[in-house]
Image (cartoon, rainbow over all chains, first blue to last red; front, side, top):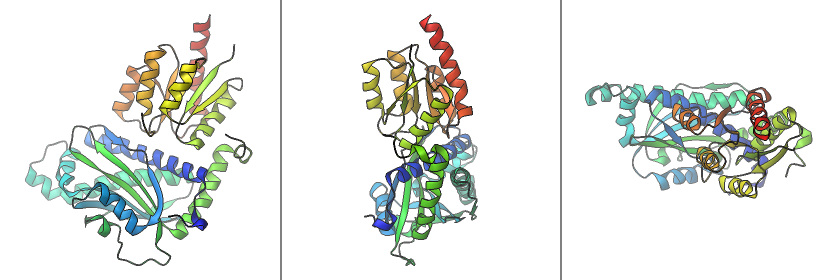
Length: 217
Length: 127
């Protein structure tokens, strides 16, 4: 599953998972403020896979039609972040972020706008925290709404410049007392992963100092 | 009398960072690490743990569940939950169990308050 050249060392994987965990936790705090109810998060899953397998991993958990807010990020490393949930949850999420003050018709009218804004806040919160901790600014594109199955969301039909391997990260989230669940996912291509490895190594050295890496049990 | 602090986090890096902050602020304290709630409870059962710092988002039981379990067994132990997830419900549940909050990423500054409080609490308990 992992090519040797891009395999992450155990501590690098650990550091990246921790970075994402902190980023997503902060994003969950923003989402909680918007929906007024507790947001539950899973532990991040981090894998180096091809896009088809990434799509399969999501489809195994969620076979219903999906809707996603997508934002691309660019900088020292680049990739794509997605807030994904079953399309059937979409209006419930819109009602949640509008304090249940809208009729179904009104909710449908602002559905796209509300989802884009929610996605924007969650994904920016997550990416911004990671960028700050790595001390590398990221340019984040405007949010875009996608509908389809996981293969379509991950663009599996578009050929990539490399062997198609990506770093795939995802976290499940669920909103208390509402039938809303979904995923926050990040995909990074191979050149980005190599840069990211170097940045994570710097980050590890910065937070723990080079002398401590070797002899910690 | 020596003080032993239990650091519970599934991330080794996070344990190292917490360990460094403890070493800087309380160099005499003995640091013990656990990677999940089960390991932590086993170590607690062996005894001699005075203070605990727990990550929130861990595989298996999360940090709040572990904190509440510790609180049941050790009503007086200074316990902190380390997380960036400062949702109202998480804070409320931690407060209800008398568990302190330390914001992630952990810094020496952010950790100082909890450790100073723990020192005072242990001192008065040992008196």
